Image (cartoon, rainbow, N blue to C red; front, side, top):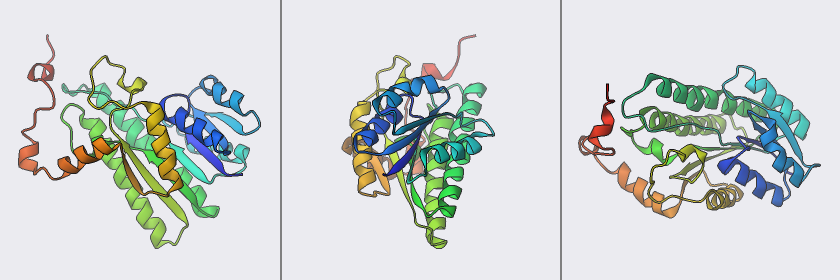
Length: 250
């Protein structure tokens, strides 16, 4: 039986991907900060789901991942979904630091732990949700776009390293656009908003095809292809948020 570890499975895309993997017959180890939010998955297949509380920002998160892998009986697929981010045109320090801590440090901690495990246990597949926000530096969300670029580059670097070391580890970088999840629960109207169920379906389909990078969906593939071609001197003049949002009232 194929075995997958899903980090961030308590809601959103992570939970939807976990549901689809269960339907496909996978055995799962699922994790989030609070295990009670994972009970729905456990009830779907009690004999094929193991639970573990893991906060990716905790120093012991890597050890807890190894514990979950042991409970699951191994790991063929490591799927990483956690992430935080919000628009921050005034560069509020707490928002920037928290985003970097979770999206860069937490990401590195968990992806690194999964990579080391697979390097020592016959390989596997590492997949993570990054974002189309990593395509360019976005003024409305500086730390979010920067950390998403970091994540994509980190996965690419590990893919190159695994190939050099002749390790049988595959990688998939999923880059969705705006998805209707709690991450966007700020009341704003987002363009080309996607349903989490549709995003999860495309993710599982791409996993089965061993795709290396997938921008989700076709509309965002067109947008990001355009973004990549915009010269820096033009991009810095783009207005991605209203001028009045740049300063706080005293």
